[in-house]
Length: 148
Image (tube, rainbow, N blue to C red):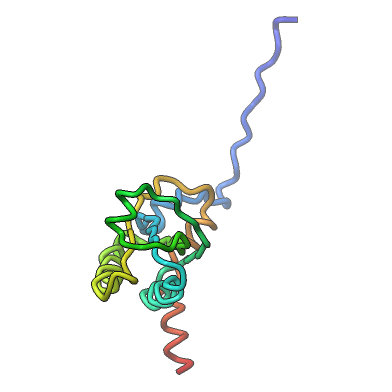
């Protein structure tokens, strides 16, 4: 009963190569979630500019605010409708996005908003990471240039 035979481990044949972990095969880019909150109707400009700057994913949501009187006085807006934008980008591209946002915020009070970035610590799955980090960026840009 207690004298069970130990099972032998099956070792793969020499012809089968084990693959190295993804982070040892490819360069891993750090990612961030860039969030921008602007007045309703301003979101399309940002989405277009973010796409021009090679952001892999941009999302736009309708949002409503109910700020207290002090914050409402600071923002100087009577409208409570906002556009909430989320963009996933490489950390290398963060400065470009910040520049786009700060230049637009300087135009007038109607174009002011809030923008900030959050680091992404982990992603479930290599395929999801490849999509969000835009791993095929150079190939895609090369084929787009050839089409023009």
